[in-house]
Image 1 (cartoon, rainbow, N blue to C red):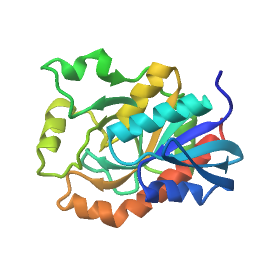
Image 2 (cartoon, rainbow, N blue to C red):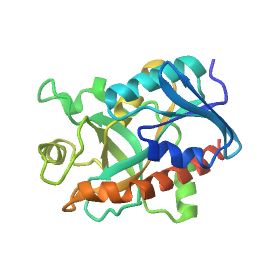
Image 3 (cartoon, one colour):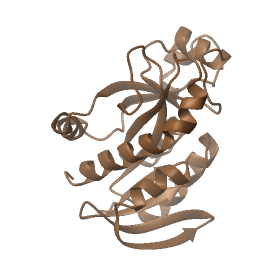
Image 4 (cartoon, rainbow, N blue to C red):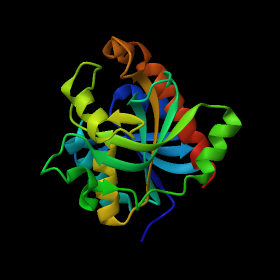
Length: 229
């Protein structure tokens, strides 16, 4: 049976650290090799975990923590790369659908419902209200995940443009987390902030420069979101 705790997963130290800095009564520990911080965020009980980068790490972390804590929901935070012209570093992206951009079992893969995750996301109405009240530019839509950093000239970006032209952002973990959540019947929500925009030249350098800003924005939005629930 689900309890009132929220599990929040970020991939990197910067992403998790920005959130832990906003928490109260923090207790750090590890569970099956996963770094976690338990405490209060926005008055709500949370378990914050660093998964490490990539789909396998993310799936392992989500599975382990759902089994351990039976959370009310799983929140995925952190940074992402924007895939639309006109986006800016710091914009927030929220997924209403998640897919893998680097998974291919034939021409019908992008429309195969087995690999589209959209049925388990939490109600997005509240977070839209928060973002509007904070006057934070945001984009709601498809986020695609894969095990590579995507640059403007990369094959991955060309594939995303061709097969997932509606995608608002790219990351390396969210689809795997949503897959696990939907299999285990746990609601999920993805709250990320753009550290770079793939259309821009040198977006890999932007990522290094703006990761802290994106992490801080994502942590703020996560804090405001849990206050609603």
